[in-house]
Image (cartoon, rainbow, N blue to C red; front, top):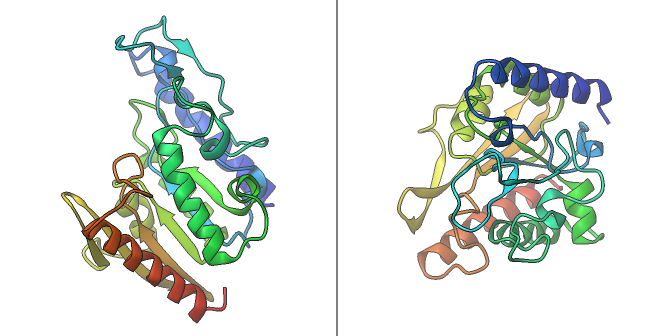
Length: 253
């Protein structure tokens, strides 16, 4: 594990967060940050898969149709990393559903299961999500703060950690962080139309030094019916996974 890089990244995020809190009028319960959705043990140079999500949701459980307020119940999620269970698999994100089974988490389970299958991971889904994939937020701040100031942090991370498979779920994160780092114009990617307005899969192979990666922008799992696709959506998803499968085979991953 790249312990020093993890600590430096965490401290830089916290410093920027503390500075931003001094300037905002938002109440603290609407703010907060999250860094990794997996264990910090996944912060290593040989991790095979990275998933970059957009940004975390509010740090509370909303009651009924109440507006955001200081009275909303706070939820105690781990901020720097998840050491007991992946946020995608075991956290309570919806008070009306079992832990790990909010709509977004169900979609992510579909994606994680597919990645397990393609990479021939032999452990459980829980182990894979917690220790086999580096999952983190492109913008770690819950509300109101821009993540552009963190580009130097992301450069340091990508300089040390460039997995063969990099999946991005954040619509703004993909061009601003990932394509920006690799020096790729947003129009210089392959597109797979999904049949859903405003959402297409985007793919690009990149080589940096001795490292080759497949960058995959996926339609946000909060808005795309992973596991329930049909028609053009299903064809697009199958096309995307076939591209991933071919990259894995061609590069003996």
